[in-house]
Image (cartoon, rainbow, N blue to C red; front, side, top):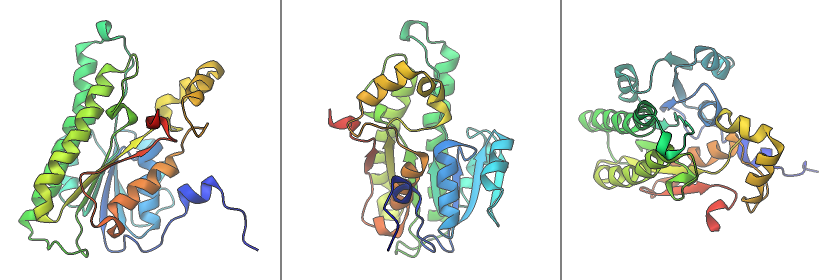
Length: 260
């Protein structure tokens, strides 16, 4: 008899060979959603490059993945764009969130948030697409050319204290659609996911507080937080040939948050 189905199976069961022969770049790969995506892509046959400023986190992500490499670099820098130009799949998972009341939000924090969450995906996606177009990649499924951006439920709704983050993620959603429209004739698909509250370091302090964690759970119709593996499952689907006729879409993976 087969073992019972579980959430872990749904979020972390890989499909070996789905990305065989493809090169993938994952930003923010040192932890959280980026780490889960990098590991799943590798398990499904991709040659993965992870990029992050956290050297120790990258080492942990790729410790047991043969053939993978990692780059310790700022996602906003030249090195990141160069790595994107070498990929077949680009996952823009790096992100920052600084919580400040709107009237007190430092300009430097606004600028950093927009640089990482919006400008970096724009630069990397442009380098990725330009390299594929210049190389004359065909538009058939064998050369899909896929970009997946990690947006947020805050691409649709605002949360107090998150003004810069909300602005950056809502802009990233529209950037996803704009790039999808322009790059579709070149065979490059551009999609996004919109994670709800997911168990990552970004919200660890909130989840550690019973009162705040309880209040957050009450807003999720499914009554629990998501896992990085569940986000990775959606991202890898959108990047795969199974989604060959999907572009410009943003998939909420939020336990039903946006239904309210």
